Amino acid sequence: MVFSENALNILTLKSFKGIGRAWINKNIKGNEKTRVLVELLNKGSKESDEITVSRFEFKKEQIKTMILKLDGFADGLIALGDTGFPPYRGKVTLSEQPVLLFYRGDLSLLSIDNKNVAVIGLLNPEGNIKELEREVVSRLVTEGATIVSGLALGCDTIAHEQALRSNGKTIAILPGPLNSIMPASNKDLANDIVKCQGLLISEYSTEAKSKMELGGRYQERDRLQALYSDSIILTASYAKNNLGNDSGSRLAMEYAKKYAIPSAVIYDKIADENNPQFDLNRKLIQEQKDISVIDPNNIAPSVSEIIKTKPLGGQGRYVQTNLF
Image 1 (cartoon, rainbow, N blue to C red):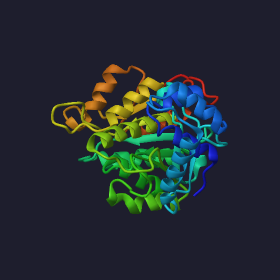
Image 2: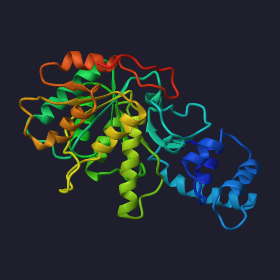
Image 3: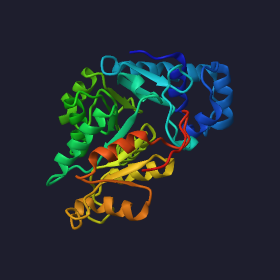
Image 4: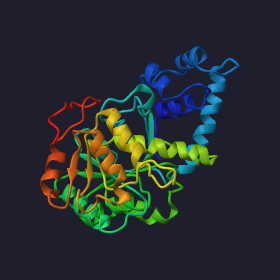
């Protein structure tokens, strides 16, 4: 497992009270000396006791021992300040910009030069949703896109599997450590993604300690799906309701809007008009006038336009183009 001293320092910084992504992105450029990091911590952390160099180094050794348990499951850890740390797309606040990633596979797929399209949706697609999603993903791969999704059951699984069947590449963003694939039933799929020159990434080295923490991690996973994609496509999803069946897709689409990532939905205004599994799709069409709508009759031209679109802002050279 490969990681730099800088990456280990970033991970150690995050272990102190009051130190999160916003603080790190604001105060750390990368590769600072330990003495400098300790001085910054004593000014910015919420620790009650003074932080010393020896205390920092002791904690760093503990963290190093912990992450070495991922050896064989992760190829490496990369962090802010490391050469090749992946750039995000869109307009992302300091508190939401990534500062580190555990990875397995081809990290270059997150390059700003790679065309990444997220394809997401609900856990239990019914009717012709699966078939339509496969057709869209197949076309995206033909057009040169790498498919991004979250390895969840349902639409995420379809997106990854179809990308591989179409001889394409795919990126899976996980809500837990790489040595504990979630869901466990997709462990073989995760291995297949890597074998086919794809990529697995996670911000986590340990499992969540509670359901509440895991819920937060799913939300952070949705955030990464947006900021590492040039466009995002919603296959199908319930809207927010009291039944508890709306998916994380809603959050991912909200992040995409927030970050100015071009968005699209799959929707047939005649066939899907009364289907609750397309409630979120309908809602987004009503609320976002610039959203692209993919129906069974316009898949090829819609995908071609999606491939041409670029996010506004971000760390790359992208600028806004006309949307669809």
